[in-house]
Image (tube, rainbow, N blue to C red):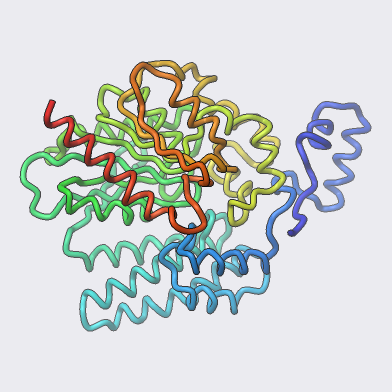
Length: 418
């Protein structure tokens, strides 16, 4: 493991903020030695990141699902440091190769496969967030490659720009091929380091079931117009407004899905937008405990379930967050309990979680299940970590296909028989 910071909230850092001049002297001494208040204490070294990534790509595990092991190994051969631009460049060079293949492809199918491969590589090149010049370039290239890939598909995708507070919510709107009549819709919300492209790709399989989707980036991620704070859910209300008025949408059958941090938003929408949503899916929802000082500290001290740079990624998405100290101030405000929402009426809800989740403690799923006014449904994996996933077997796409989509289809079917 690599030491990349020195502050531990439970030990030194809280004392620096509150104690005497001696504490402040220590603080400025540490700063003068080059330590950062924005870094987590311990994280993987570049060699450890490489090894863990290879282990995950072999299993098809997040965030390397869909990547080719040979491509990953080729990129790693070009990466020698933990510098974010070095990382982006390594994966970008491999991705560029597939963009060239796509440009010279003889068929749409061949081009689509190459563009998709390039998109996944560019996306991983900006992982977990585009917080450096090189990673920003990689993110932009990922979007371009994904749109090029979409243009090769038989079922069209519309890139929509929904006006919002002088900016735009950018999303992928997709309806089933040859759909007749109003279409039930999924509002799909990504997590901390996934993007609207990843959730859009997951929801492609629901199109054959007569259901469409709108995939948008959650606050602070991707092309979202605002960053995270406890009022940022207003962005999703605007997206629901858009769906509600769309002539092709069955506005009585809109379901919100959120994964990881996105599950916080879908859970909140299940309360605040209960009258306009048929139901919500919250996969590892952050409700209250996740936003506590103790859990923030555990993440500052390192989280092996997360591949790398958990705290830098979190700082990137929060409005006004520049240091770890900012997170201790801002994050607790996100608690649905603190906002007075727990216990209020909800729409139908599926909660998906893993008992061994180290990113979003299972207690938050339990809180959500025990509050509100109507029965909720749950899929809880006693051996699962974040999102309910396991190292093999119950991996992300399996949970999605066998648990989440069937529940959404069941909900839609039941609503039609009532």
